[in-house]
Amino acid sequence: MFLAKKLDGITLIDEKRGRKVGKNHIKITGTAAILVKTKQSGKIPLVKPLLSELTKSGYRLSDKLIKEVLELCIE
Image (tube, rainbow, N blue to C red; front, side, top):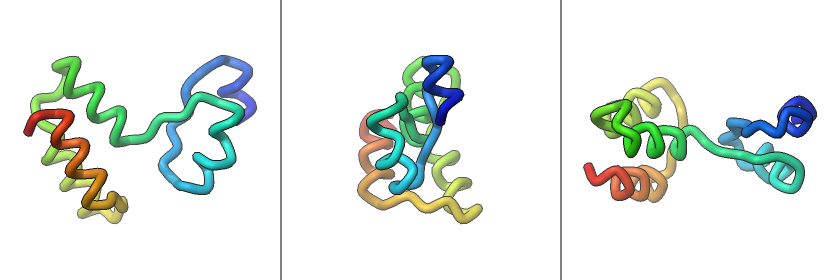
């Protein structure tokens, strides 16, 4: 967290507790937001298969978040 603040960078944090602690000190983004931005920039064709792979490997995403991501990516 201190390095991100010093460098004025963005920190990738997905855990609720980490986001809560860091939100007042550093810029935070999550994996879902990175996938949306990457899709919107045209660097990846689809997000849905990546979300499926993440969940299969044990990464937890709420159904609500998945729905929001797919709506933003128009899939």
